[in-house]
Structure formats: structure tokens, C-alpha cells
Image (cartoon, rainbow, N blue to C red):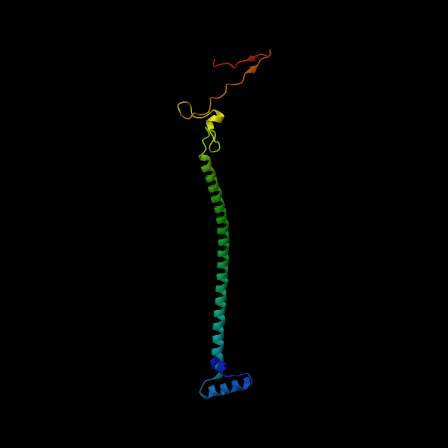
Length: 154
């Protein structure tokens, strides 16, 4: 019936067109009340389908929102991880630069002689020397104004 109503132009006289269709259907044994009942049943099925699809859309929208929250959390964790990685990498780069420095020998600009400026360099035999021995403890003043030497291991 719906297909028939769509195919026939009803713009000018819709009531007349519907009356002709109704009379034609009844002449072949189709009651208009049965057509109306079928239309109501189809209408109910379509309404149920729409409600079901709208419910599915709500569920899917909630899933989308949940996924967006997960993405936001992962994005924060990713930024924190990248920051920590970069910090660690820069520390390792600094450590690599420092590992080339021998703390027992002075580091001078290229082309200079380290031993010539501070006296800490290779000895006469050509072997590298370490730092000089530590200084002795300071002397104490006594009441008479004279300097007293520290006591040696008694």
C-alpha cells in the first residue's frame, strides 16, 4: 500500500486518490481495516527498531567516551615517559662526556701539556703520576706565641 501511495501523485487531491485505492483494494477482497492493522504493526516494528538503534548509539557513544579517556590517560603517560627518557638520555650523554675525564689528571685544551702547567704529568720514566701526597696537618699555636708541631703517632 505504501509503495502504491508513493508511486501515485497525491499532491492535488489526496483524499480522492486514497478513496480510489481503497475502493480498488476492496473490489479484490482486501479490507482497509486489515491494511490499517498491518500498517500499525509495521509502525510498531519500526519504532522498536529505532529505539534499539538509539540504545546502541548511546552504548557506542559511552564506549567512545571511555576510549577517549583512555587515550587521554595514555597520552599523559606517554608524555611523562618521553620526558623521563629524554632526561635519562641527557644524563647518560653528560656521563659519557664526564667518563672521558680522568679526575686524577688535569684536563686542558687540546695541544697543551698538562704536566707543564701543574707539575702532575708523566715522571722521568714516562709513566703517569697521580696527584701529589696530601699536606701535613696544620700547626697549632701555643699560649707563648710559639708554633707547636702536631703530635706524631704516640
